[in-house]
Length: 120
Image 1 (spheres, rainbow, N blue to C red):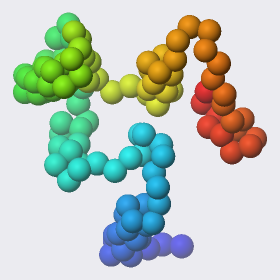
Image 2 (tube, rainbow, N blue to C red):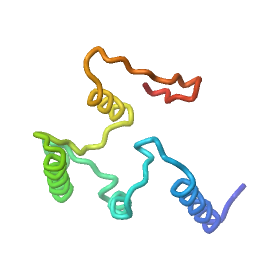
Image 3 (cartoon, rainbow, N blue to C red):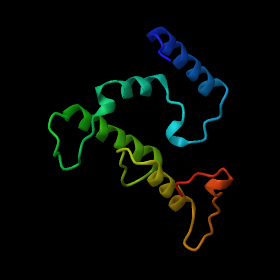
């Protein structure tokens, strides 16, 4: 079934309302963003990445923004280091587990067959 652009936009609007008002988003990578963050990620900034060794050219402003964000994160969390480069959901899950557990702690995971996340 083919849809017009206006029908697709209406479906997107309904999705936005449903996800934002009628759902509890428990997946961190699908959590709600502020309008400012959403605007930034909708710009060219959201499709670029940099490297700490300055391999990619033309990222001067991205590098400055990244450094500023890292300084803010270090200050906010009282950390010696911070890295704002995006990670996969799996790595983010492992970071949370490593941060909230001690060696030899037990972690319980619900199997995917029983409604749990298959990534862990």
